Image 1: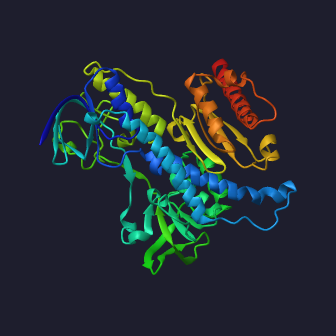
Image 2: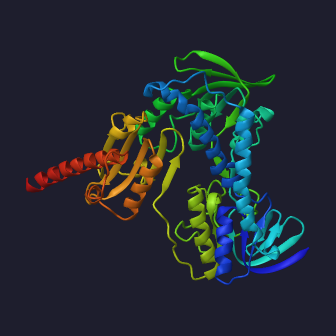
Image 3: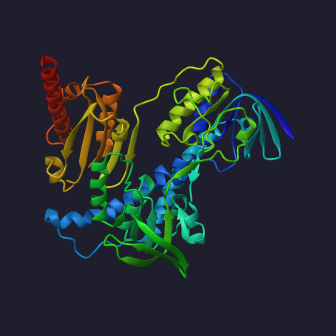
Length: 474
């Protein structure tokens, strides 16, 4: 058994772990990074990048469908070569993974410990059966894995998670996607546009990242135009059959249907990888799911020398958040016990569907009724959006009644990735609706739709102010 003594032990070499390790070593600490799986990060291997490659192919295949409305002729039809599509996805995916591996290669070999770590006590980790590490501080950055509910476990290889899609050599003919969240919507719509018949099922009317009931309902109707989507499905049974899975369900009309699909894609959420870490051998407090309780400003677990970052904390499972959390955790692990709050940015989540979905700042569900107004705009008649035949979408911005400050926004909109960034910057800067309206808006651009929503919010703020003045005068 090899024995090591280090200042900081980082468990996991994903985005958060790499950031934590580099921050700790930059502070002059002796640090090691432990990894049991393949190097390359979830984002590069099976997340952000390969999914965007598949989406790009889907967008290219779908664009000719709009040509007749522009007065353009499409002679024949677009043919999707599934083998070629997946070959490019995997080829480019491997390039992105290669960039990460190049970065990992710069880490000294003595600092890279291969194997799965488990806590023996508050200051000791054992890696498989070959290394025991005594540490002053540690950072848990073990990431997350797709969760597979019991109802799918009897379907064998025909029940897959999003990770498995990027191992395909060809596209299937039919799939059933369970979970119209971020992953399900992106992959489901992309597969549909690449010629795969898609059935999508959800529960509790949840669609995308939305908490705003009106935006959620609008999005559900918009996606239902493209493929079958029931956001509150009644599934009677899932039955393995030769060559696929038979899905028995009640359709929108209440009629029972049976469809056979090649694969069931389980996109019902991801689970933090903390179950086999031996956290029960430490003194830190865990929540009901077994995840350490922590301060998201410092990433510190209680008042301990143990920190957590990235998807493992089950807070905001996004790459840019994981990188920020890793840097904060690494800095505080290096400086312990002098722990300081780090920079946490305005939350921003984007779904690369068409139209795109975005949520930034405070969600509708986070706000107290009566304390905010909602500025509204539909993109169906918005000038630039209509000119491009991308006029589908609805945007809500939320503003504080007392101060007029922007609080958050939820949207389904063309180029929501850009609108979301603009609003996130304004929210983080503490701008009011009026101050944001004083910024330049070019013509004709999609951002004019945002201006319309801001004007609507400003009018409602003014009305709320007038009512307050009248009550005060009375």
